[in-house]
Length: 167
Image (cartoon, rainbow, N blue to C red; front, side, top):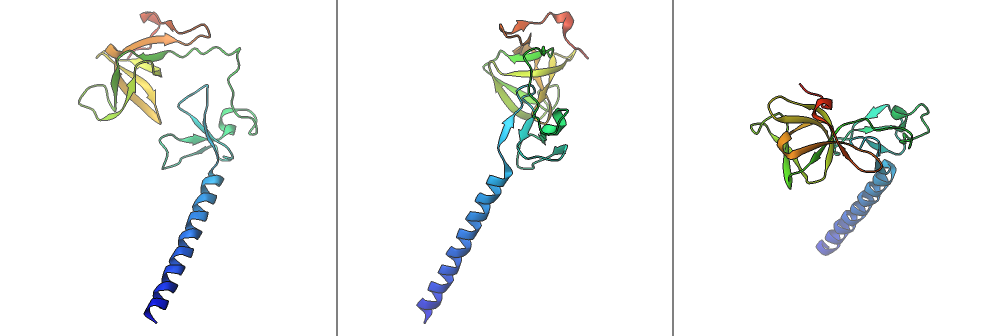
C-alpha cells in the first residue's frame, strides 16, 4: 500500500513538472526575439512590444517598442545610409578598463570594456574622466584609456580636442 501511494505521488510530481516546463517554454516563445538597434546599440528592441517603453527586470537594458523610434508603429527604426552619425564615440585603448558609477576610482565598478569597444561620449570631465552612455544609463571611464572618434563608412576618424563636449 505504501509503495502504491509513493508511486502516485511521484507520478503527480512528474506531471506537474512537465506542465511547468511547457508553460515556461510558452512564456519564452511569447516574449519575442530581442534585437539591438544598429543606430543606438544601447537600445534593445523586442518584437511585439506595444508600449512606448517597457522595462524587463531580468534584462540589463530597457526595452522600447519600435513605435518609440519611428513615425509608424509598424516600422522598426532603421538607420539610413544617408543619415550621418554625428555622435562622438569613446573608443577603449586599454586592454581591459573599468566602467564606474562616478568619475573616480572610489566609485562602484559597473563593468568593464575591452580594447576597441566604443561608447557614445556624453562629456569629457576636467578631472580626467569621461562620461559615456552605458547600458541603461551612464558610466565613467578614465580618459587616459580612451580615444575619441567619429564613425564613418571608410573608418573611424579621430576627433579634434576642440570638438569634445566638456564639463
